[in-house]
Every structure is written in C-alpha cells, then in structure tokens.
Image 1 (cartoon, one colour):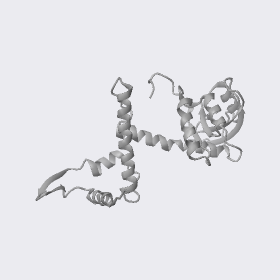
Image 2: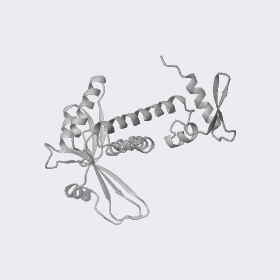
Image 3: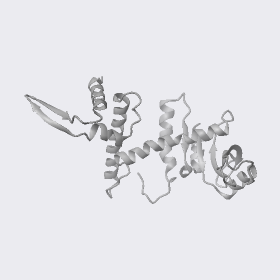
Image 4: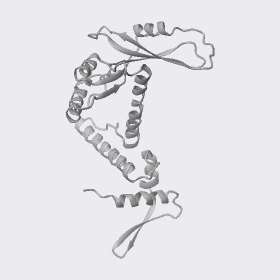
Length: 249
C-alpha cells in the first residue's frame, strides 16, 4: 500500500518486478503478458518487460506529437455517411524524449456517428507482427473484465474502505475483504447451478445470505425454517445441497 497523494506510476516497477520473477520461475515455458492503462506508462516498465521477455500492451497518454501523427493518418474530413461510425487501427513507430529507443505503437482512431473529428487512443507494445493492430487493441480492452472484478470487490466487500490512519490496520482490513471475496468466488464456482455462476455479491446476499428464517429447536437439533413465501427457496436449497456434498481432501 502507498499514500493516496502519489501518482499511479509511483513504485510500479518495484511492484511488477517480483510478479514477473514469480511467473517466470513457476511457468518458465510461458511468456507473461502485461496489460496496463496510462497510469502505468513509464519507460522503466517497458525496459523491465523487454529485459524479462514479457509481452506488454500499455495505453499511452495523448500528447501533441501523438495527436499530430494520428491526424496525419486520419485527418478530419466529411464522411460519405455521417450516420455511420468509423474505426481504424494503425501501426507506427514512436520515440518519446524519455525513451531510450523507438517503440511500436498502435493508434485506434474512432469517429462516432454524427461527429466530424476522430478520437484517437494510443498503445505501446512489443507484440510482433503476427498480431494485427486490431487484435492488439482488443487484447488490451479485455482488461476491462478485471476492472469489473475490482469494482465488485470495492462495492460488495468494502475493499477500498481505509478507516484507519495505520497502514497495518488498513492492510489487515483489505486482506479480510479479499478473503471474503475469494470465498464467495469459490461458492459461486463450486456450488451455484449452471448459468448462475456470474451472480454478483449483492444478489447473492439477497438470495442465500440475508434470508429471513425462524430458528426452531426439536429435541437435540436446531432447524432454520424459511418463510413459505420465500421466492428464492428453490435456488437456496440447491446451493445448500451442493455445499453439503463438497468433500475436501
């Protein structure tokens, strides 16, 4: 963890380096692939990936030179059909002043329907020519799936709630949130019926956790009795039976 008033890229190389070392040690036959947004776009990270044979696609912040290059490829002009969107993927070489060498960049140019000007996005990568510019951009865009996981961890488990001035206390709280999130993922993966394993935590709480019931004692046993009008009873009992069948060695 780090203070909240430092930039995103602060310490990113020190953070990524042990991860790369771990995967290179555990899976030496595989080539790690790193996707990152513009907050991680620092030359030291590119250098690290290239030294460790890590493939990467990292979004770049726009600047005047990149915009000029993109405008040369797709200048503003009247489209034959302004009701249709246009999207182009181009490949070029670019070297910023802080870079040791020129690197391959991908330019995505999109003109939304009804607009006159293109909106450009820029990505730096070391992926070879076997990958088309469009495939490279699409591989970057899939990182949005991971952002959905992070969003659920924040909204559903309070992962981002830092209620103490102590780093250690905040870290302990975050680890408990991560434990709860991982246990919920195991529950979804192992015990939920087919087609319902992508259910979000808010829905899970409504259907099987925050469920009104009555505790009844009969002899030496305790029973939870659900209300007869509980609309998710079928799903509840399916999940419970699957939990009871779990066996761990």
